[in-house]
Image 1 (cartoon, rainbow, N blue to C red):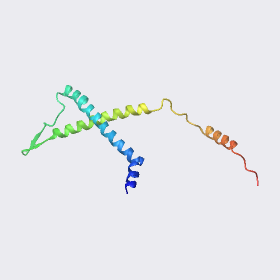
Image 2 (cartoon, rainbow, N blue to C red):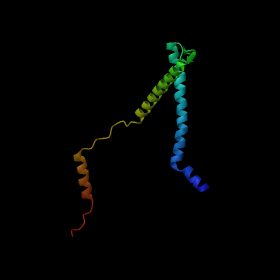
Image 3 (cartoon, rainbow, N blue to C red):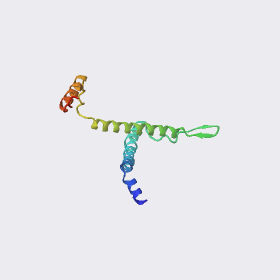
Image 4 (cartoon, helix red, strand yellow):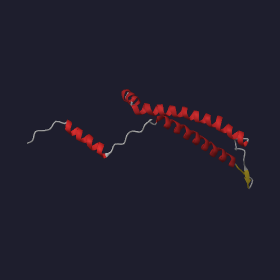
Length: 125
């Protein structure tokens, strides 16, 4: 049973998943720090305060906390925007410098012809 557990843990998928989760948590911390430290500071400089949690109105004596919803929506938009920009930058870095050449039908047929010429011919029966 111990051997089965060791084989399970050392299987590539489990290790890849563990690494992905750890990197995801670290990446989430970077995005959260960027959102809270930079983007929210810019909003605070423009609007005066980035936290709308205190915004409420009363309906039949019950406070409706719509400011929390606004803050959550703003945070979602900021985190989504930051994540989009980071992913876009990473994709740009991973993109090959020159696109691969597109093969035409003529090129493919020539490759097939050349491959057939390289093969030894079987004797006719």
